[in-house]
Picture (cartoon, rainbow, N blue to C red):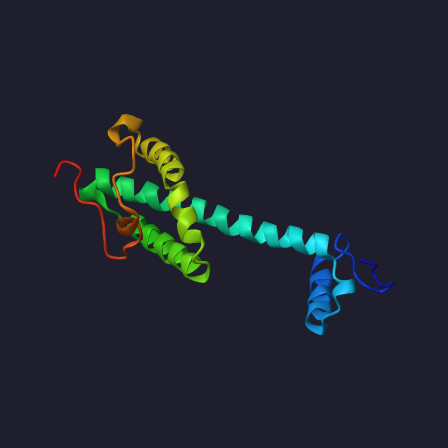
Length: 152
């Protein structure tokens, strides 16, 4: 790409660069497109969505584990966090259905992190929680489901 003299550069003004690139794309001015940086930004967006799924799933699993171990002490805060994470994950999956496969791929890793966090937050040993996720993907995302008491 040969950048016109007055065109904003990627490094100097990102927003102006985005707007300029969008105008070129709409006009079909392919020679003016900064394809290397566009590709980098698109890949970054995909990484960002995957990172958001991982983070939200870990928070969700942490709170589900806390509810699972302390069914009698389910605070409004825990339940609110569960609802918010489910809602946000569901919206991400609706916007990008290909992330559904990714969700399944990272579940075990997110569960491991959630298990550690739940144990630390509740001042319990990790062995208080199962080694593998005791919840199905459907249960995890079900807006009305909460884990029953672990002893049941």
